Length: 175
Length: 179
Image 1: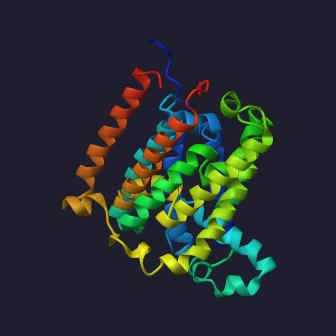
Image 2: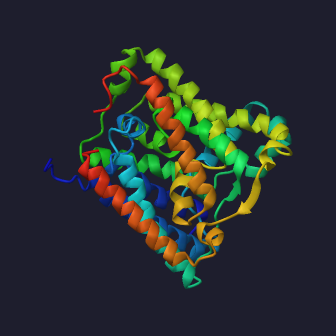
Image 3: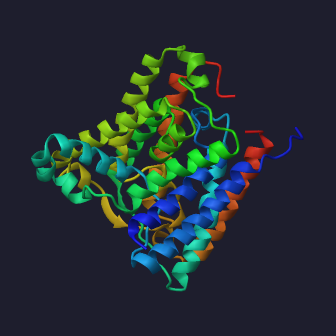
């Protein structure tokens, strides 16, 4: 099977799950940022909880390779803050914007057009950022177990407890 | 409060965790390279295709397009698939609904499609500029990063959400809220 077909099949399942989780909606995304409706956090942390165990199990048996993205403090933090600010106004993230249009929220088209413009703009800015800013605080790929000098499983166990406590908190508060 | 728990986001989320795991395994087996869920690089490639039709030389000479490669790859088709999957699922259970302005937005800023369009465009441009700078979005850094216990994922997701909470509090203050 080609790379493209595998991507498409995976994407159809991804889109159906995003839609069934009801996370494609502007009100869910903004609701999380207003700390009033934690649907997207429940969805993301559930996915992370299961995926964290699954992927690390596969890696432990040598069946797959992990490929964590490089940690670059300046770019991760400044880029992350810019993204968060834009996200609050746009009401979608890149993946959910496409799914939102598909479930009839046609206004998400303007978010997609804006993101295409933002990507084009970054391509123009890249030559000026590449050698300076984008190297600031560059630490290479780093993982939490690596930094703590621990194996992955104690870290996974602690994170799993934290995520589950978050779920309990959300449900108690009716978020 | 003894409200029944709505299991929907937990079940769909857990199934996405299974999908992410199966996808990493299947791509390793079939393609020889692990593919992790992500979305924002596809916007770079799509922008590259659009620019290529207008100014092919310009795209060829741009180091960022050269680095990310303007091509239809696994992730590009993943995003095409997201559209198809969301469309099929929403039609299947009747939750498909054409909406011109989000209700939460309308409560705060009124029913103007123009105001919503300009705001979404500008918000989208800033967000994507930031996502490319940070090298990922809530899928790549958030989901795939945290599944791999990546430090960059924890930093990026904290910044995404922290800045989102601050800006949302400023922008939607005085509106009817999100419920």
